[in-house]
Image 1 (cartoon, rainbow, N blue to C red):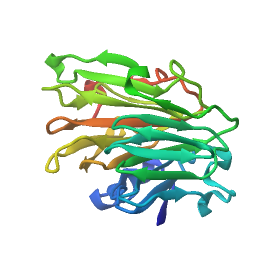
Image 2 (image 1 turned 90 degrees about the horizontal axis):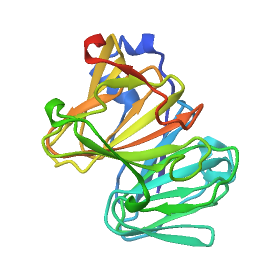
Image 3 (image 1 turned 45 degrees about the vertical axis):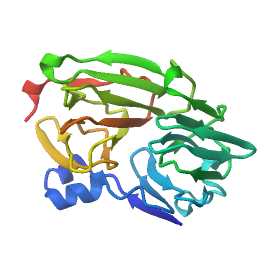
Length: 274
């Protein structure tokens, strides 16, 4: 079963007037991982798509999506898939890949229908593409690893870059994930914005009762979302993104826009935020 929700772009002046319910309606992705379903959110931020596929014993195929008005979803798109569950399989064309927890699969433009099977819980990201790059399964040992932060500021973390110029080529999709180390809770602090790209976060690996306070909004007009495990935050180009969580957690970050330069960001120090 396929379910697609469209999220229109929100201007920052509009976001300033929103209460909790409206902020969650427009910027939080809930219930993406439902057994036997593919659930997508089609955003008007760089036409970026996020979603989840949970085969739960029966294969699921992502083929035609009415919102793109193309013969197949990947006809003019590229895709990044992260398996956040147990062992599963993804197939496209005449290729098939077994994915373990934490593996990332890149599918290039024109890969055709995509089938998900096995015990995986597959996080889907997709952006428009202008040329075809080779399909590639990337395991964590092949990612580019960066260690940042300090225990004194509670933001010691490991960043693994997968779909990234240092690892492989893509059109505009950039993807990886960040793991907070024991005793650290703050992600991406100091916060930053990048007006040239949108970004989406999927919080992952959290206890059922745990939550992350995801900070968003303009630097001097901050807002927040309370996010549970396997919930996503959609971050417009004008918004900061940072957060603090209860206990261990990870987040998958994925971006699309004018460039694939991971370092193209404008930092906002805590003293500048309100």
